[in-house]
Image (cartoon, rainbow, N blue to C red; front, side, top):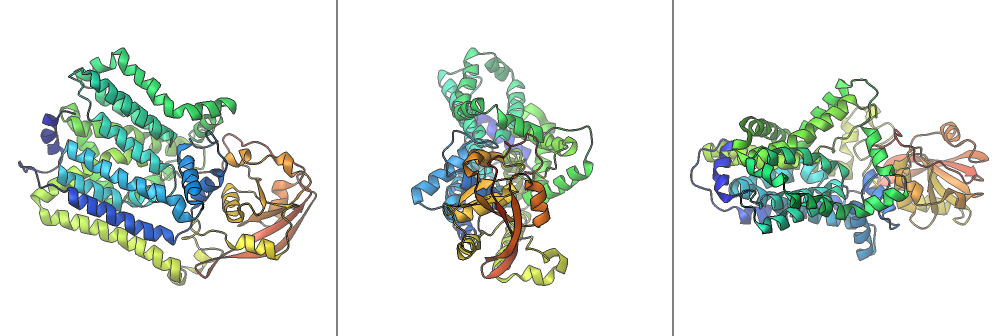
Length: 531
């Protein structure tokens, strides 16, 4: 985007200041380093979530792509585990923590290019202090991490294109942007939702429409597909199951679920953070209202709006039991520079108000982290919450502890790894159990929605073996109901106590099953188990 446009576009925020503010680069670097170190300490004391554990397990076996996700995230986990020779939670998460620092810097560069350095500083703070964007997406080993860094890199690259100049070098910038966006798609398929808004923003300018009529522009589609070649090859060999699976999750049966959509929206306000969500929504409205005459805000608003509307629509019409609270992350990314512009304008007009906004944002986020970490070590929430909330397990730490006690107990009970394999009937239990036992026992996922687990092991090779079936909830009758016909006999064993930092988390139910028949169906498209 031309430099001459940027000062005009800064007026999208409430600032009336004419002169540019001081350079905030050093402050941004300091904030990024401090945030990285703080999150490094926090995640060291939290074990992997269900999805992270699943990623660590499936990443053990090389694959061009995966049943439910494109490959870049699981490749990243695999690379970290091989590089350090460990699947420890900190090792698995380390690349994603580094990516969050890169993402923060890219947000600063984007915001500075469109507005100014002060706006960039506030945009970075909003990103890092958002529970969804900075703490979850920026700290956990999940698909949103690499998707974020590549979307931001593609956007920053896009801003360097001068559509009016028609320079040859702009073709190279366009192709670089396409490649980076292809990498975002190779991290998470939902990134495709940013494309319609981007095209609208380009087509709203006369020089942009001329650009879209050039044959050279469409070579970018070829470049975009390069990072997706592993996805295409793998899916061609497996019946295009990834796209069928993801598409089925958005399918509807004609019913309207406004209650779920309301819960989803309320959750978005909380996990993005009310002090970020409010300004983001306000600036989205202003960007759309002012239209193409303010190019930067218009571009960012156009990229964001279709994502948020589509995900909200899925929550309304889908018949799948979705939660999807993290799905809209890429829709908030383009709004961060606008939040920075809003806060920068507030700082120019009312410095005390801007300081209070930032201090409250930081204090509330740090308070939530502090409450979580003190509960990890003391369990204080169990003493103040209603007794029924903690009756069977800790709902706060439900996903955040490993099942390290499982392999120890299995060995102590004398299970023979040559004759016994580990199984579960939920993909979450499969992930936790298989991660815990590692290569000490063979593993087979017997879930109705066993996603990529079905490609990790051939059920036929387990024919005739006995199984130890682990389950967080199901009793003997429920396990027998789910697996009847695949084993000869079932018997319940003594539960295994799972501990975390010296506190009891859960009693894991254990069922012994004999003589597996060696069959299990492939993943069912449209299965209801995964969110």
